[in-house]
Length: 277
Image (cartoon, rainbow, N blue to C red):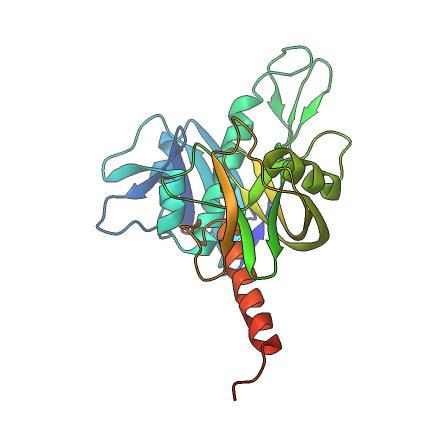
């Protein structure tokens, strides 16, 4: 299914629409055995919404982000992370987009400069202050992710808020005046006290908790012994490729980064290993 983003619906609207409805940070799903979403006649659901924003079209049908005060009959709340794990990749990404748009709208009802109530700006995703003309667009917080490697091993760490037994790549937010590469070197040094080289861009992912843009790299270890940053890193160590701990699912870019790097390193090792007699 192809998604085409837009800020304003085309006319005429589609007869059915994808509705990404939220009560606070929970996505609403129809009460069913398996979490799912389908296009539906959204007029009745939109009538219950306190806020709604147009997202674009998915497979030619309109998509809406809706905020409701409570679930209507026949619908149930599910935390966004759990809902994204249950939905297919396209719908999960759209649910994340809808969540971020609604959070932006909720948190910018008043001007951050003068405190005046803001108004939606026609034709673009923005809220504007009628008093001082300050515009507020949906916020994005760039964050780097770095998977540090050396031959035969990956450096993985766990934060205190991770699920029990879960390890992942290193990550941290980009600071003002900092490039992504600067951020990788700084965060790796701060979190585990090692130096890295050979940075390679892997990919990026919108991460709606609450409004991050994750930019992932691999980086080769260049020296230093692991010293976990107090208060940030609960534990970090080198793991052999055939003895990795529990890692994030493929919902997150971390899950893809670790698995794809593991596959690449195993493939390279197999090519470079001596032929069997």
